[in-house]
Length: 259
Ligand SMILES: NC(=O)c1ccc[n+]([C@@H]2O[C@H](COP(=O)([O-])OP(=O)(O)OC[C@H]3O[C@@H](n4cnc5c(N)ncnc54)[C@H](O)[C@@H]3O)[C@@H](O)[C@H]2O)c1
Image (tube, rainbow, N blue to C red; front, top):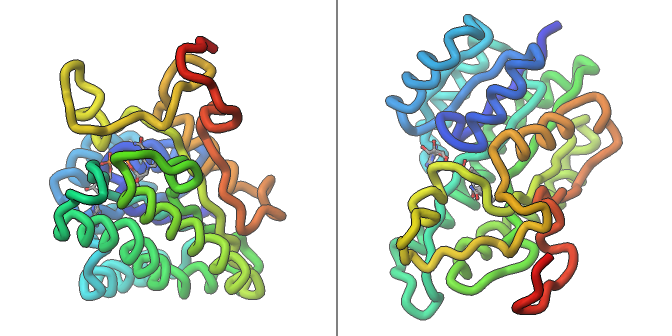
């Protein structure tokens, strides 16, 4: 039987990389995103996977949009073995000058959107678990939710909230056979951070620290760990947050010291 996963934010970055990783492993993937254009481009670029790639437009901030999207997924697939909540936003800047609308946008997508989309995915995951099949949820936290950084306080607060959701949901849904975990990536080269990494940009974005292995993450680095959490090998892993940061926050590196 083919395993089926739905991924929010699948048109770009880590969501897109995760879609590719799972498709390469034989999964059927329902790519969800608010960007219709992004999903059309994904269908074009991922044509090689044929009907194993499905796409559904969904805005994770809108319950009406999610109801419509999950009704389509229920009709077409009947159950889900995996759900990855990758839709997210980044806003930077000091807390004392962060505009209210930016704060609200961050929490609407990164926290409320993760909760609401997962709430709607749960019946489909429980349907798989009830048949004795695997049912896994993976959230995108961030290393900034574990070691907070300046100029990223609001974003860090959303990711700390995602970590709380991971732990509570893991315990609440375990009896139904649904396991919930999170990955906490360090800076990953995606369209979310690309504008901030351009030479000369001064957006007050800061990387999570210096990677001891000398490069920032690529989407596939994160997708590989998500793939593990969705695999039979992770059948006894629940309620964990796995840093995918090459050891960036494992030990303090004093200023001026080169690792
Ligand atoms: N890139 C990094 O350095 C990094 C590090 C740690 C954690 N993360 C987290 O990983 C996740 C993915 O980030 P990314 O770097 O791939 O970002 P990205 O900007 O490349 O992709 C995010 C996707 O989410 C979609 N999206 C945004 N708002 C949405 C909404 N309301 N409804 C549905 N889709 C929506 C966008 O259209 C886009 O396709 C985010 O939760 C982010 O916070 C990223």
